[in-house]
Image (cartoon, rainbow, N blue to C red; front, side):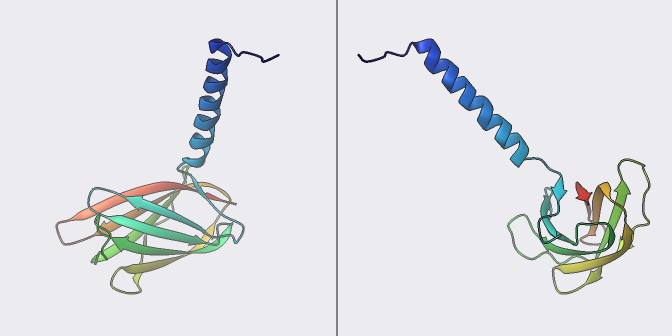
Amino acid sequence: MKQIKSPMTSRRNFAGLVLAMAALLSVAATPLAAATDDDSFFMHLHTEKAMANVTVSPGRAGPVEIAIQLETTDETPLTAKAVSVTLVDTQSGRKLAPVEASRDGEDSWHVKVAQLTPGRWMLGLGISISEADHVSVESPILIK
């Protein structure tokens, strides 16, 4: 005998699938960048004027290096006059002194930070495109 499903059963199954997908997407779209198995992590930050590809290595407590590659919004290299990095411990409010990044190339910069403690931090970039044009962007990160 063939079993016939009622429309209500189909709707419940569909609603369950939609909720499961929404939960999965909310976890996947979490803006908090965290370390991967190799203890480094990558994040992409953007504003209306600039984009930055940022790699933090390692993503654990201790000294870290931050590599920054700048792009325009049409994904061409962005030559900036200066880049600074700020880090704020979101739990304690402790703010490290801003660090000026060193230029590695036309669009590449790097920073060494002496000591980060485990926890959630807000990483901010201050990008000076010209004397009159400055961009700020930030993103939360997790240091293990």
